[in-house]
Length: 401
Image 1: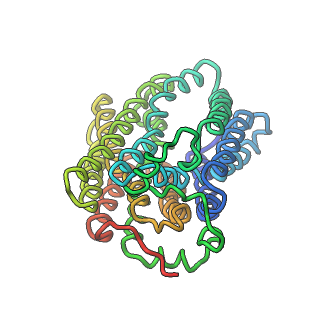
Image 2 (image 1 turned 90 degrees about the vertical axis):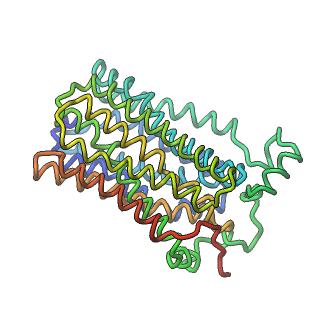
Image 3 (image 1 turned 90 degrees about the horizontal axis):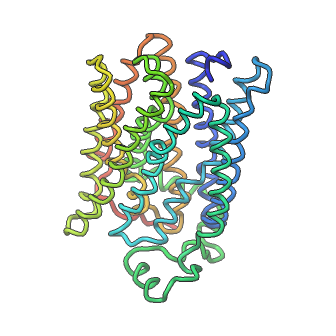
């Protein structure tokens, strides 16, 4: 695509970051919309418009060449705008449906699903690009998104509205930490009255929340390297074909998925064994970030197989330590879970803007990915520092009315 549209590394960096600009700007409004209108309704619109703008990206080559890059930037921007409520919505749904002791696993599954999708679709999309052209990657994924939107409308319910929910199950999950009535707001509640600056200021003045917020920024730096520059790294730095990259890229993605699920399961296991919530959440994060930092070792070998193994280990570690969303479900004030998730995602997805741009400039200026991998590895270590020395005890924050 970059060759056909005559896009430089810096231009690609800006296009990759376009998603992040819109995603970032819509986090707090998206969180408030979730708290006001509920997860199902807002997520439905999010899925539909995500699918639409993904589909439309397949037609940017119809524009004059001088406008193709701008058109792609716009489509990526609208994609981020549409997707913005998704992860805060996921956090709300987990908080509504799952007791505290099961929340880590549930959050890990939804957070790791992005890696599973990379593993599942990378070979398919690589083949589509090779056989039919890059345009079909976007049109096929858009159609899949429309199908998932229809399934979402049909299958998803709030706990109190689910047709198969028994009174016993509802009582059990409610008494064990699930906020089952989250989408049944009373007039005058925090969600009904709008995203007041007073609530946001409380979140930003709380040391625990700030540690979690900044930790997510550093963790997401690793994610956005893999989501944007990793395939290009394999082609430019390691000389792989696009078809081979489609297959190879699925290996770290599978490891990221496995690490994500295991990290959540391990965290919940520690809670069930009687360890504190603080230790049960922090230990997997610290171990995972240590593993993720091994990405720097790729600079010291030319063996392609070893590079892929190190990338797989790093992405496994990133997945294992990516427990930010369970922590938000554990700590967010119950009146503003969506808004808190939005603020959390604002911090986290500054990385979606910064990472592609920084790597784009580093590669353009230094003609190598070495400095880029150091940047990513050091970000993993900084995430570890946030949880070890800033967060403190993990507990639910209480709003001051």
